[in-house]
Length: 382
Image 1: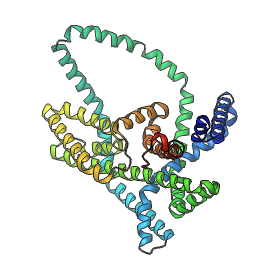
Image 2 (image 1 turned 60 degrees about the horizontal axis):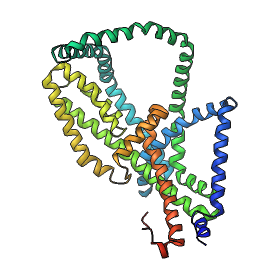
Image 3 (image 1 turned 180 degrees about the horizontal axis):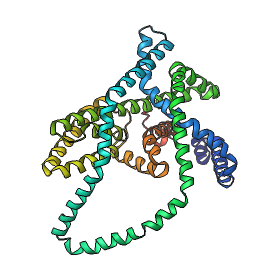
Image 4 (image 1 turned 90 degrees about the vertical axis):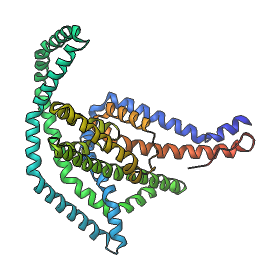
């Protein structure tokens, strides 16, 4: 009786079907690794269509609330989409035309002078090391570095021998980027216009028995991912603006460019702001210790405002992910998938968490049904 009840708890025969399904998936993946060359055309197709789809979904979550607002104002959805896309494109073009010359000049100047900043920083660090308790070990460390540099020509030769492959990769990357930029507005248009239809269509693909569950999961995923993307981009923009104001107040060089770098990298939580401060810190240290102190004060002030006022009010508690979990997810995704993995790590984790939480909720329902009366009930909080 106890054994039968346990089998019912884990789903009965359905459990074994699920296990068999995952075994087949594993076998399929193993076979794929052995004959992956057969699927090369499929890889090319996926690598071509996935980037613009991802860009379109990110833009969809940013623009969809505005389209919904226009629709509530009795503007037909298709006209709301057209007005929004044309208005955003016009505003973006105007901003680029107005700011491009100054940004270009700052970036060119920063690219040319940044090696000098690094060299001055290196000289300062060398002087500090030689005058500190590490001074006796400086020569040994210097010789070790020079020995490693002596191997550099051989490494360069190895890289040059693979140069043609590198050129092909660069050309492929440029081509895919251009294709993504050109095609993603069209995908975005249809997502904004027919997004709700797509969801209903996906739900209808499932058997009627599972449609309510599927709708609930898709709705939760939509809320989680949408709130994260909207909130994180708004927070990153606010950080960029606050840092730009702070950099102007303390008179830091290249304030606009450094603020843009901070805004872009802050899209990645926790790790992004840490990366963003590095170029600003190098420039400030080389400028003067007092400038570095002022930079630290500005950075602490911005982080205080972001952590206590901006993020709590914009992000809220929708994601409910512990900071340590976020850092671990970012590190793992970065090692597995590079920069793209870091950018998409948290939305991907949110999707997995929604599905996992729902499955665990179903498990608790099963447990309460078969064990709750005599073993105690699970708390049923979604």
